[in-house]
Length: 107
Picture (spheres, helix red, strand yellow):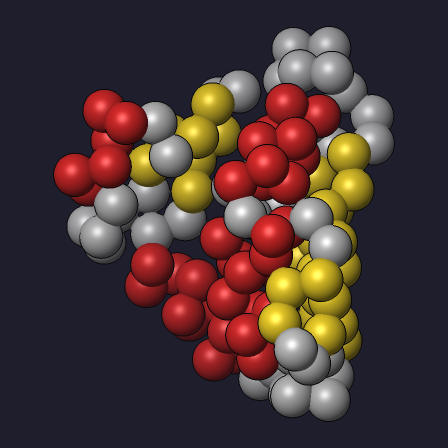
């Protein structure tokens, strides 16, 4: 998260993460998790990795998490920001972020 936005990190609002995208507000991530009913022995697919926040949350619940981001700069940021969006995350499973497709939002 950019330094200038860190004071807003715990606010229940979306925040910009670059490339014209936002990180979902914490309530929406929690609602997605509650609605999807992830299981400890289960697998989860997160489409649109963004910052990697949803993948990190799911990795604490599920055995395996696969998270896909088509905007390469966002996938790279997520991969570098948190082990949850790169490879092994928790003792029980894995999370993976995959960059495929566009180099930026505009291409």
